[in-house]
Length: 128
Image (tube, rainbow, N blue to C red; front, side, top):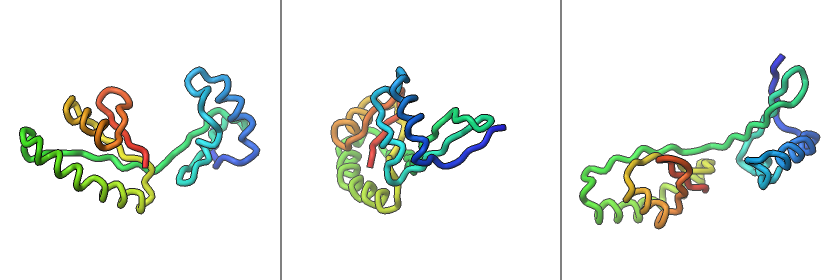
């Protein structure tokens, strides 16, 4: 039977061992799963832990410029308006902002000026 429950302190040993031997997460610390503002659940099969799932509150944005060719205005508005968005998101308990774009110029602007990181493909993320 599959069950789930919130992670407990007694789960840290098995999580530590799992992370240490994982080729993708060997540098991840157990504290990542205990950060304030996150929830970690343990999924079990017949009482045996199989999966740790960490969740955090993320804000997904969709951006639409009135005129893609008005680069100066678009940049000015983003530089002026984005800090307030970030602050409001933090106050509301969000841990990161995510959005997708296929525009190379917007990707470059967001990574160099707004603190986003390109994750994979067209996805950009910024931790709060």
